[in-house]
Length: 467
Ligand code: UD1
Ligand code: MG
Image 1 (cartoon, rainbow, N blue to C red):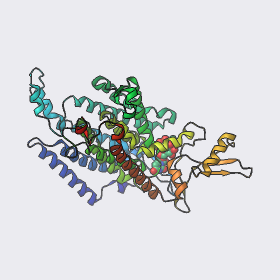
Image 2: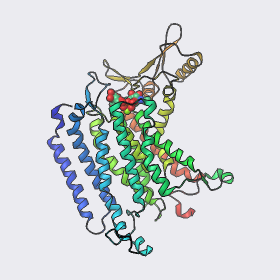
Image 3: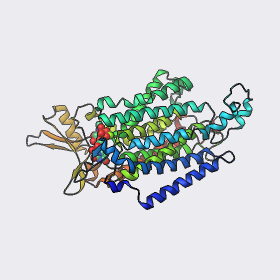
Image 4: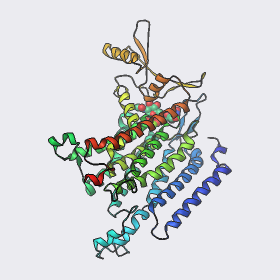
């Protein structure tokens, strides 16, 4: 990043200022009457976009000065650019999330106390409930909200630590589990729901609802480990980390809106959970869009592991606290495939180099498969499996004159895509992955809402008719 590029252009400055003006006007307007937290959330997200956009630009040189920088491997000159810009997104996001608290919770706090926080005033429950309608949360939801914020803070701290210290993979996969700790503890204290609805074909054997007990916590921890790490693994070309996260966030937003009036009978029991999810997702989309402007090909900044963990943890928070972690996982199909496909390298059955991102060919300007070299030919069984996979075009191999494997392509979705569709430009590959993510996610949501009724007794679309 050259010094001059750290300044905002005149058009950028005025556009961002206009966006800030619009968001301030919406928030100011919300103080008249009851206001609408959803509108305020949109305004805060627009503000978060402007703030992140400017800060990324201004802080680039300072990040480089303290060593937070990385080489862009898929460029001829391998320029060094600022890394860990996800930290800027995360800090803006967290501040916005905290500043937003009074809007969905304020009325409830005032109604349930005498106004000065005195809890001695007895209120008729009916009276308190009168203050609630769409957009408003009961006070007890504040604990969940704050535990989400706490977990996100924890993951950002750990993520920055990872970017600074370059922790080894076998250690850092567990980082998100520590990040999720505050949320799981509050879940235990506040909620403790560990029952799941049994799919109808299994109900004769297991009953309608089964209590998973501590297994449910193990499952939530596994989701918390998977989401952030899987985003960090589907990485290495300009723009791909942020764009996949944006697609997932938008798909979650579409899913959330299906549960809100006027799409569904009111009041739906899951409405609060999905509104909660929207309040976490909108500012995330704001800060991520600002990052994408700088991270899309050709990148001016890298996102760092901080962003991958932070994005994954936003999804974990909404999925777990909103009770739709299964739907959440449906939106991670490309990441799941990438993880399963990577397993032989992750578990060192096949050698795993430090970087597996596609290789840049300086002559053609295209990305090609990156490979792992076999210092010694693989054992007979692995060699046979690799040759079969090569035949099925699931992996590429190179053999010597004796027929021994000397190199094989790295097992990532990006490399497989190049194997199938040939070498391509970096931005084209990123665009393909975005489209793949969108197509898989839309299909998954369609199947989720169309087919769920075949195996579960109720869904958002028929909730009232099934009760
Ligand atoms: C993960 C992957 C690794 C991949 C790396 C790329 C696993 C087990 N690890 O490691 O194979 O190479 O992500 O992010 O799957 N970079 C670019 N262009 C980009 C983005 C990143 O050249 O668009 C390079 C830069 O040199 C940057 C570095 O990748 O500094 C960041 O890598 P890092 O996030 O530290 O890698 P890991 O997450 O450990
Ligand atoms: Mg990374």
